[in-house]
View (cartoon, helix red, strand yellow):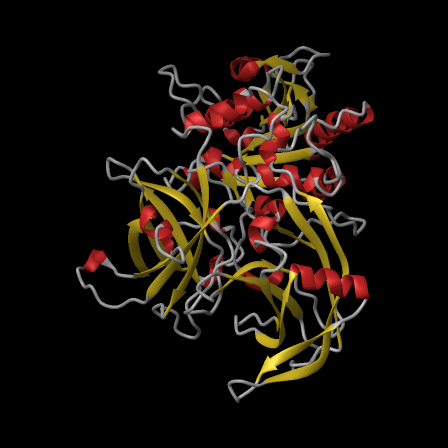
Length: 586
């Protein structure tokens, strides 16, 4: 898999137009000025790749899928695998879920490194996602709990050598030996352009038609690009604005790799959102980025049109589209920052509450096996630490415990894991492991489970780096816990405050507890966290993974935890116009 990260989109409203998915973020190996970087080299080396490779983005759509739902249509999601030489499958990525649709065109692109010198077999599987999982992040979905709609396969080279770089594949189900028509899957490949050019656009509309019976329309925009074959591929959506015929949406950013060139036509469609998935088209416009820039300069609007019953005629509507802002800017990649001297500072907090069980008991989540087999806490520390340590220059990591009765006999919700009063840092991942093992002999498990103090401590450290005007540091706190929070609102308040800081929080749930609260903190369902005073988080900074889920073999804990991190980093630096250090753009 190439070094391309994309934001994950969950089911439900977000997946069908409820919120703008993070744009697919493609990365190349720096842009000069950064010199050699261990983190970049390790990332590629650990995946068996050379640093120089061609990044390809796959856009997927399907036609005539099987309908597996009784009262509505299927809710399809596609999963892409690379087939390894030994025959095993490696999951490359998943699309979003599209509700009530047998002819989906997914927005989430699947990134893969194209290598000319090897054969790259791909497997595509389409699933109908059960309604009860629509607010679950797609990466956490267990595929064996979804209805299988069909499978197709081809070689990557087959797609990229087609004249329009699109292959249409027949879906089948080999498991039952019946090869009947299960619909088709179209795969379109685009080479990732290394351009950093992007345009930020603010859309608003006036006098939209009201297509709701009992309230006003709930409009959102979908922007699609037209490819050589004449087909349109969706690249971006705005959020839904409820009950508003004159909506103003948050700005969206389109990269040049999405819109191609300023002259390329874009289809801008305005829909009324419906939970059934049957969104009602209010109107559409075809404009290029250059056209949108002119609308902005002239302070003029463009009328929407609606296709009429007569093929060659369109009805011109009173409703208009306006461009309140259209700014060209450079949009640097995650690796632009990393290779120019930005670093991720790793921090760890470990749960020492009594619900983990007596560490001397083999059934305890904290039991250290004499045979060397790692417990879940040790696994999470090792697996995440081994990746992030390359991005942390001094490899000195703050490490805390919480919920334990410490050396002085008092319960503490943020104590230094190494037992040293005035020094919370340990040396390397091995230092964290040693401090953790030592603390199990010196700290009595207690409770309750409070996250607030360790989040506030991490936020304090991140805030101090800003006060020293060091904007090249970004902090990553790993919290490993077995329990249900007793300070959920205090934790939300701490996270909302921290959302303005250069900080991301990774939470690993160990054991078999109900981690519903953690999913709330993760905010993958499109609803940002809100504090007790009503303040909304400026961005999503939490990523949660249950160890039990990842051990089912669906996805690795590191992949699940870290896949959103580059995107979260970029949501911090880009709005603040923080540029890579000493980057020579070529």
